[in-house]
Image (cartoon, rainbow, N blue to C red; front, side, top):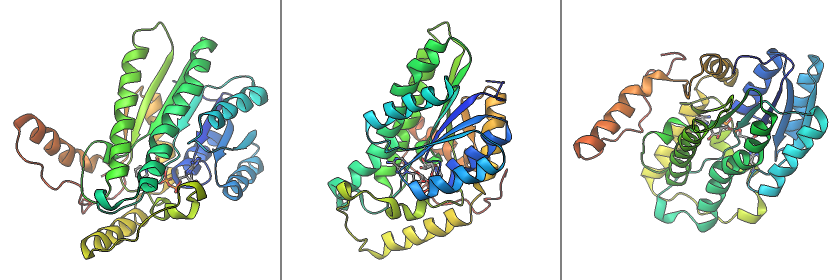
Length: 289
Ligand SMILES: NC(=O)c1ccc[n+]([C@@H]2O[C@H](COP(=O)([O-])OP(=O)(O)OC[C@H]3O[C@@H](n4cnc5c(N)ncnc54)[C@H](O)[C@@H]3O)[C@@H](O)[C@H]2O)c1
């Protein structure tokens, strides 16, 4: 997709972190913007920020776990702006701990937001993009955790591998059609956002969880949180994503430094050697490294 000025972008998870960075970049590109999130206070803040810059904004409180909520988001976007061109299925949550000690609610919350949120976004918006007949694009936010596995993040890693698989499958499906609609997958490394404190927006209907008990889990969790907080600035992700869109790229990465670990994982799959412990944070996380 090459034309952004005056076109309409929809962003889920827009009230914080990467979603906010994407929203700011959409505004900088002269787009009209639909912001969606469960965090209504956060939505209000980014809406006012963008409106002050003169951007046309619609904020729609949305729970991406619910297919009918995402359908309503699509309907509200069309009602306000008459079209949708660019959709970021970006909302996500994270929790850690041994896979077998995570509760049913832990598993379902993460999969409902990170995977079904993206599925719902594709189901609600792809028919609209295709019916419009012009250029359109969906960007699904996965993670480097969608390309390699590691300890203590099973629900998250499972959800992100599934988002990569879904997005790649849809990419192949689009190739069977005569369409200008495309799809990309964003696989960020550590970005300085609120994801390490996802419990702040945990819904009451999936709140049953269990505290981390072992030293290994606690140690990993605290390293992960500090690695995230010292990560790349979310606004930089917004710029990288638009570079990717202009370059017609399916895979959009923020941290090329992970290439070696991903390659090691792929080689282990092909050669049948046992997995190396690949999820340790690389030492050099400098943006663009
Ligand atoms: N921060 C990182 O290091 C990192 C790395 C790789 C991938 N990601 C992915 O980036 C995406 C954005 O996360 P972030 O890091 O900006 O975190 P964040 O916590 O700052 O933002 C996530 C947003 O999603 C919203 N959200 C959560 N559940 C929702 C729901 N049910 N419906 C609608 N909105 C909901 C939250 O309210 C929040 O505003 C996620 O998919 C995350 O997995 C983040």
